[in-house]
Length: 451
Image (cartoon, rainbow, N blue to C red; front, side, top):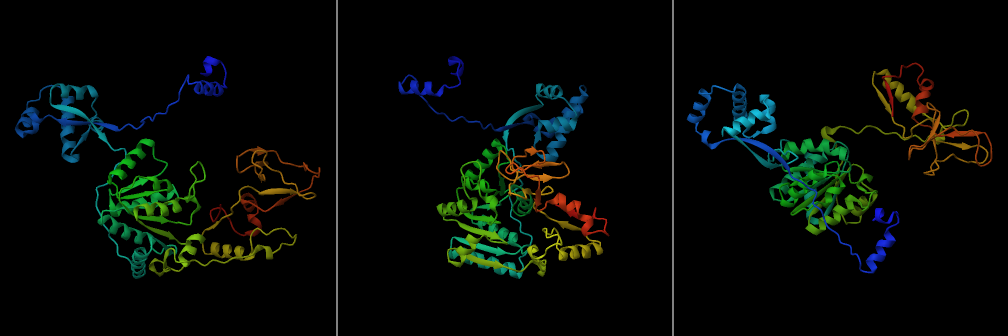
């Protein structure tokens, strides 16, 4: 239409044509999924008889490469059960022409089969661990709370064994023929959990998240719809799969903000959507966290959710001590903000003296998160994002950490013309550049990692 009218503004013209009923609009869905096909090699039924096969091999006189190909096929048949064409050619070092020669002699033939893009383990349930007394008590309480209420919050400290309780619950639901959704906030966490679940449930487990291709997600979608997959491990989008017999939703790390879909639309909270979705199936929801969200914990105190606490770590290990230090009460001689507090410096030196390593986390990149005019308080900002610019001393640039735009250093205030600026707060670059001030006797490289 743009080429006919030689104009980019064609929508008003189209609307007028539609209003005059010269044109009409229709929508159509296009199927883009294509099943994966694999070529399999089979032995003709004539040679299923061992005598005829032996006679064939013993009286073979010509085409030694075809003989090697046939022997490779027989070996793969004995070890694998089925022979894929690509694997056969790779193992035997043969070509398509040599395989074609055997098919023309009616010794072998090929056929196309539809195969899964994702390989699954054999389906089995194998639990090879026993719950500790504390875990067994929490497991029994979880089942009791889920009988009473549709949602239960499992408040378990780090390393208390919440995953073991999840596995035991999944086992119970699989045995009753129900489906289970195991939700995690981050895709990166699925690879850690999937190895544990596959060890116990094999091919009953399926993974679903946005990193899969469209064709792979269609196959998982169909397997969930057909009931072939009993347990789905996935991120927030896995709540929209077509479950047929959903019995339990496990929402691990339920406090995590990654459950919230920000962009693109539809915007939703995966945890809250799962709780509502469970009501459509009369399913139960187990929320797990070491630091429950305020809203979930409030729902337990108001009686809306059940609550089970698992405050004992596995092996009776004690939690590491945490000390809060208010740096506002510690001022330097020049009255600037302190970077490292004296107790932290003392603790780092003590750890290094024991030949141990230290990691210091600072949630700001660059040298200084922002600089401010000492006269009027003006702060240089990104012209695209309206956020303060971070000063990177190493590259001598101001950087917007939202869009990545870089600017030259500002020496004159755009509001009052002053040339006096003060750098506020500090980032990892400033912390690294001042390490000798805090640890003068230590060779910090290899001992202290600053992130």
